[in-house]
Length: 266
Image (tube, rainbow, N blue to C red):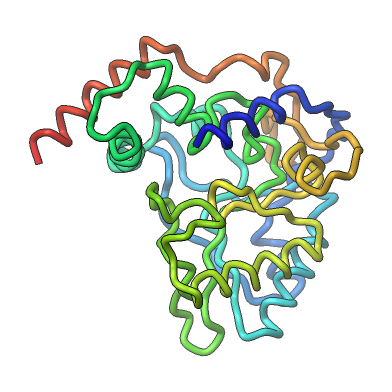
């Protein structure tokens, strides 16, 4: 977890030369290409339904990756894509998500209740707390599940999407050999098409943003940073205060106290 926080600190200062590319409707692009892709109907935020949009310059990268998965008998299911400030704010996530994070933090701390600052560090790794380090807010990242082409059942990757535990990390030693093989097979397809896996969540992939440029050691600046979606055509506006946290320590402490009460009552 500390390695994840150090990673985020490097992303926080990683250079961005914003391209201002539009956020394209991903469902429409998939339908036009005739590729088999599935989209989740589950809202991950209490303030909005999923926004399945992606930057224009990486649509073809994604479609090619999806086609390659189809050829190998798999379908990629998009769980989440672009997020607004409100959607990304952890305070606007369902209670069960925050409780899951608290469980893994308490497990790490051997049951001791940590200070709010410590929780903030962990949230920074598991749910990005600052726009600059949230590639979903850049429109350059997706969360995914792999499905079998024959049955459309979920492919075993060791854990379910959004499970926050010791199996969440890409190289977790707590998953089976088969699950690890499935993770790496999908990683290979995605990376060949410019999407790099976030090491601390096995479902998250980024392209041409700070995560991808840093992980690929390209030496190039990111061309996608955090933006606001400003109209139905997909035009964007850069977020000027991108290094400012989405919530205060005080707000987080209140959420933390509520979570601990729920966990103790079970």
